[in-house]
Length: 152
Image 1 (tube, rainbow, N blue to C red):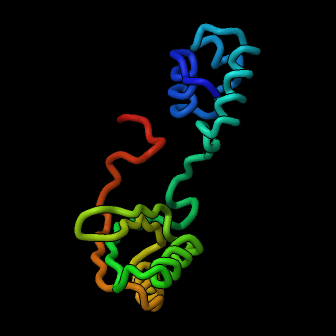
Image 2: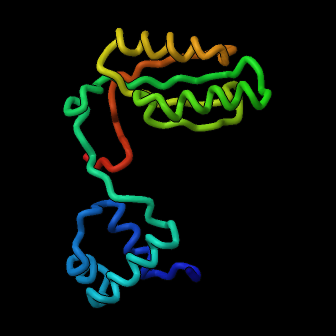
Image 3: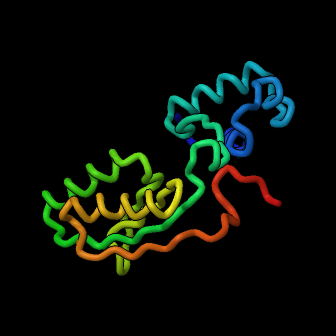
C-alpha cells in the first residue's frame, strides 16, 4: 500500500473510536462513497494497518476486576532465559500486555485477575519460571483512561 492520505487517516481514526461503523456510516463521516470507503478499509486491513476489531468488555464480565502492573528484570539475558520468559508470558492468559522496555526493568506486564489470591498465584508462577532476577508489582487503584475508552 502506498502512503496513507487524509481520507485513510480519517478512516483509521474513526474506526479506532468505533470499529462497528458500517461502510455507509463511515462514508458519510469521511465524505467518500460507501464503495470507496470499503475498498480503502480492505486495503488498510491488508496492509496491516488495521490489526483487528474488538469488543471492549467490562472487567466484571470476565472476572478480571483487579489490574496490576509488574516490572520484571530477568536473572540473565542469555537467549535461553529470554525464550523461557517470553514463552511463559505469551501463554499466560492473565497477562494482558507485555512490553520490552529500557530503564530499570527489562519488561513491563499489565495483568488482569479476579483478586489478590489470583495475583499472588500468578506472581508465584512467574517466579517459578526461574527467569526472574527482580520484579516490582503495583496494583491499579483506579482506571482513569484505557485504550478504547471514551473521554468522560
